[in-house]
Length: 405
Image 1 (cartoon, one colour):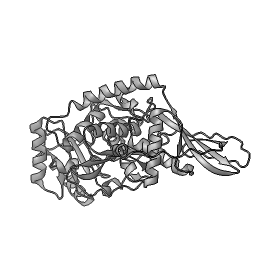
Image 2 (cartoon, one colour):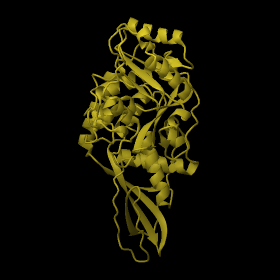
Image 3 (cartoon, helix red, strand yellow):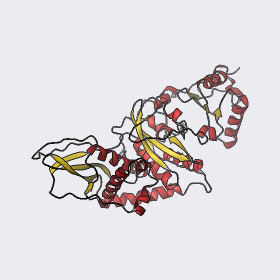
Image 4 (cartoon, helix red, strand yellow):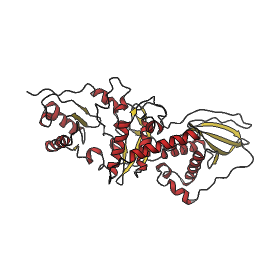
């Protein structure tokens, strides 16, 4: 007589993973602080994205330097840069150079809000600029009229410490990237880097530097902002066009990635691939028990919008491709209750020596059909090599199943 299928005690705990956000604070990692200076004719106070100071300008105005065309080319594969107007691109370059050279520059805008946006765009495009967390925007005014804005980055580390960290990060990145299998295509490269980051990083809301890549590469613990920036950093080095996406999930602020794989855009959430994400929960599941979760590995916009809401900093593409989605690419996708496909999924897992089987259903109706067949009618025992209880979890949020073999 068949025994009942047991649901592991961590089922509900695991599902909480998809019902809350990172809840770690400001998604952009910017240190907000107001600074105000009395001026002769007027007074302005503002700090939504930066530290702000107001002073009376000198008589002369600095002109906006124009970048040679060959220098502009270095920004062509920067997603946020590409979404800006020509004038905003000039400001972007000024901010970028200023952050690298640690000097104050005049910028080609008189709007602090526009400077805020562009500073964020620079950081979103460049995870390697991990050493700034705010800036001073100086408003120069004459007779109550703003005539110039200048930008000066604020830095987490001094130059010597920064150089040391850059060297160690590059060593870690080289070690990881050297493990990419020879001849790997886009899907294989993305999966390899995704797996490495999940396996080598612990989710910890109290991790040092958890808003930048130092937390992942040097401390091996982070929050979603660190996971997403580290993913972006490695994938870009591997030749995969990737950027950062900031937004929200039901529990609060969150960050993930927009990735170009085999010529099509997809979304990728490395944080939600790591069971350590719910490590703040009671009865948290150890990484050695739970597998890597691929429910948010190269998904389209329809899947993403069920749980994620991107911010509106710049337009994002409508991701419609599905070929490189993990479950579809690996033949782990059910469009109906098909026992032949189920048999193939379990057989391949046993042949590879896997400890778990994961697969996804196309929609809620298929999910309910499969759940009824495998669980209520207990046909799961037609596919596993045991008559003992089979531990599993199912996630109706993503229409996925995971069975331990």
